[in-house]
Image (cartoon, rainbow, N blue to C red; front, top):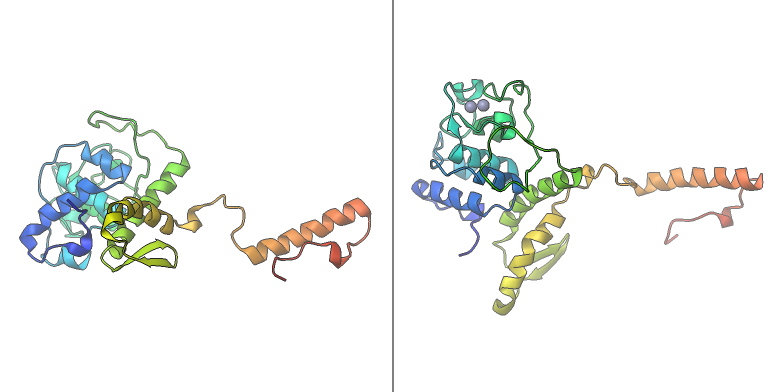
Length: 252
Ligand SMILES: [Zn+2]
Ligand SMILES: [Zn+2]
């Protein structure tokens, strides 16, 4: 069984719920896996037929939203957004303790949810902390903070899932960046598919998120380095450095 990609969404709207179910079941995201520990309750229902086609359930945020709609509890009263018809899904559905108890529509739209867990009403961002070690069904709001690397990984994997769905159909095989190869021969197909999500994950890395990255702008950093270098030279030798002794950018 191949992986279900959003681009292959069947035209028949009646087939959408099953197809989306498959997409959620195949998601590699730990956040989606956490939600999958809850029992499947219902097929997704959309407020309009063209919603799935025009928007999509391919990035991490919408997969989390869809998974919660499938597996969560129907709220006693719809939240402010659902009441106004904001968001793609029918029903205000949430899971206490997961994504701060926000409903699927609010998660999908990146909005704060008036049905969120106590004291969480103002939160509109995804909770990127996954609970990987937990094995049983999830109950309560016992989210342990994960190291930030996990968060970055999760963000990257969310984007990677999206990217994989965009790149899969072509005759080409995106290795990394601009390095694209023709699709591998049949005997290597499995191996290539095994590595494809990992490569997509690398490709999708958002370098802006690497806050501790020492060099963000090579030119600027080099100018800063030059100033520091001269200062140190000056402080040690009590004279200005001769330009030949200073480091130059490679290739110059
Ligand atoms: Zn709602
Ligand atoms: Zn809501």
